[in-house]
Image (tube, rainbow, N blue to C red; front, side):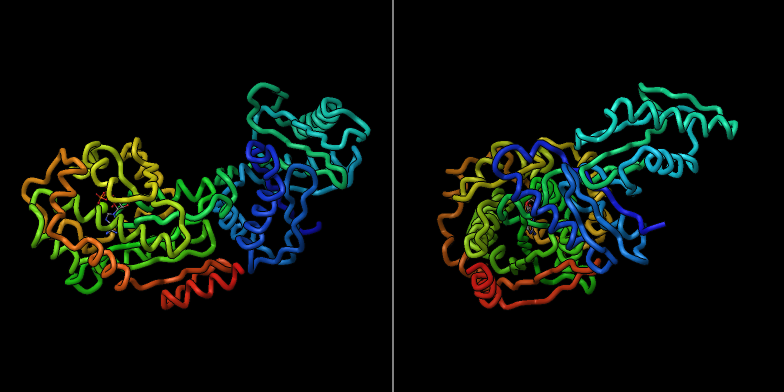
Length: 417
Ligand code: ATP
Ligand code: MG
């Protein structure tokens, strides 16, 4: 038998309109990069699907693990490609279904080439009858059931070939990676911001990350390590990512020294947003992203969120604003960030935590509380102190390099020019 092939299906919704070719090209690229290092002969696009022809020695397990993280894939299947004639189709359908255990089944055929000899319905009936005969001949107690069958044999007839498969595997869904533009994500070491990042990547955004860290952590407990670990979990979805790391303790000390105690955490947040915004502009990110969820902690009352937000001129997206913690944790487990976020680390925010954090601040309160701070100088200090790690996912492996910020940005500008 020839090497297995993979048929990849995407949702049709994002294909409407002029962007169709752009999205398909991006999905094609994503498949190619995701499968790097695995023998692949070619990736074709017959009709409304993509077909990956695997090469000699490709491990299906590895292929599946890689494909599961390609955004934009609705579902995929390991399929048999055969010639477009009924005998071949029946034979392939039997090979596909024989090893599987079920009591009811159906055949679903789709014809993207209307010149094929039989209609979809006729094809279903012929193959269904063939399967039923073969199954009965083996004394298997099965029947055809068109409504909610236990097993379905799918047949797709394209202009160039026919595809047969029985086991659909659900894909990551969403839109193809890197199709929506760039966003700067404030990535803490906690569960929420990594999950927020995942949601936006799934909508096609390309994320850069910024993490604020304190000093004085015990060995092995730095939050830098955790932020890096999260970046490594997230980079396979978008193939490369930057992580800006900003030392924050000196800035916190200024806030502790010159601002009212109750507002400390909110003022930390405002400084984080401002520094993130400044980095975002250099990074050509168009918006900011946080993992805030309404009412989860004191700094996330509606009033506090609004008051913090006023410090940023850039739009701040908060995809988890209406999400429950249980759902967030379930997603964190699914995408593998849960274990990383569970590691103990030295979080900069609880440092100098006030006894009674304010619950209902207004933007005016916070602006007043900042009156004695040289906000511009503190932002500049944060930006100047930032270091940059770049992550790349290639051939199933992740590499990371520290790059001087200025060089990284010029390199990128050159690449775009
Ligand atoms: P998370 O689980 O993402 O840390 P949280 O529920 O603990 O969120 P907070 O700690 O109040 O809530 O943080 C709210 C948001 O502010 C985070 O989701 C993140 O986007 C941002 N943030 C908080 N601390 C940091 C940090 N040290 N570096 C970067 N961003 C941060
Ligand atoms: Mg947190």
